[in-house]
Image 1 (cartoon, one colour):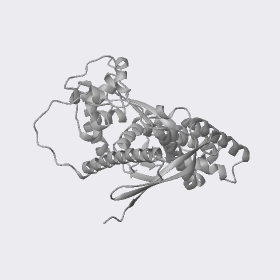
Image 2: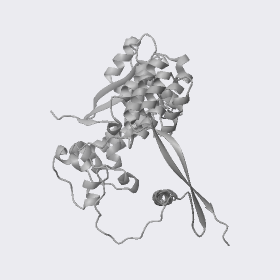
Image 3: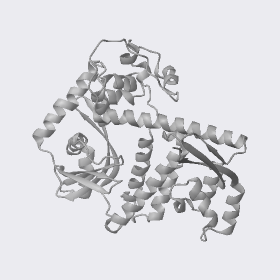
Image 4: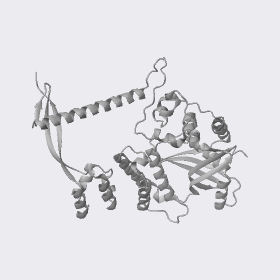
Length: 414
């Protein structure tokens, strides 16, 4: 018996983005690097599952939901989540708590138990073993259900393909039909009444009516089955594009950049290629061609990079000027067009960030700092609501350091 092809919406999306990328990921089994937006989305999905769990007779309080979020968040390090730094992870943590608090403020009074949450469905159909995870199913009555999918990315707008696939799954799956019949034994056939995306950052719900059968059939044949056929036939030619290739984890082994097919080693042996902090593509063979006209977004990207480079150069110059003025014991010095003045102030800093974060978490002070920075943590030392014992513990972790500020002023030379 031929085994059905393991398939999902995400696999279809990756193959349609680039068949070669699909081959690296699902044929060679080379994992991608961790992505912070996946970790962030996973934590918030877990909170939504916790809130709406049909097995809970009562809905959790905001405090309980935030505690669940904290527990999920702290299971992995910032590196394992894919964040570039501790500060960026802390900003993600603060944003996650903000979204949960805003969600409670808007919806807590109307919480209702759904039919299911985070339901994993495996549907055997048309030679596919189609795996789907349905964020939430609400029963609308008369055999109709609402499919709701949570989104946590920056953009609100979404393509409907994912909901089309979910509609096919919900209306075909024997398991989902059995679930609906537990709620309403009279149901003979399950039908989708509504499909919706819920964008958690903006608390925006986009609702769609059930897609017509003809539309679902065209989607199924032209996208799902066509993609599956390409995979079965081993059609994995790369489809490079500037945007997709720029962020791809497999650039350093991709034939577009290396000029040769990747045939091995096994996924495990290939992993070290993907663990470096910087992945530089190997130059492709030079081809004579007319340079394409740059788009407005490409020009903007170049300006951002140029601004960043100039900023780094300015910072280097600033440090060199301060160091030289200090060595000469100058507080002011003149150029031909500008004068520089050095101002020295004392600043409280916290170098052992792990100990500071542990202390703030222990005394539930993270929410007071919003995003824990040097200045917001230092402000706790004068906050009347912070217990004296906690302030003393913070002071032991604090270091007073002189900070030099360089001021430039245009001279009046004629």
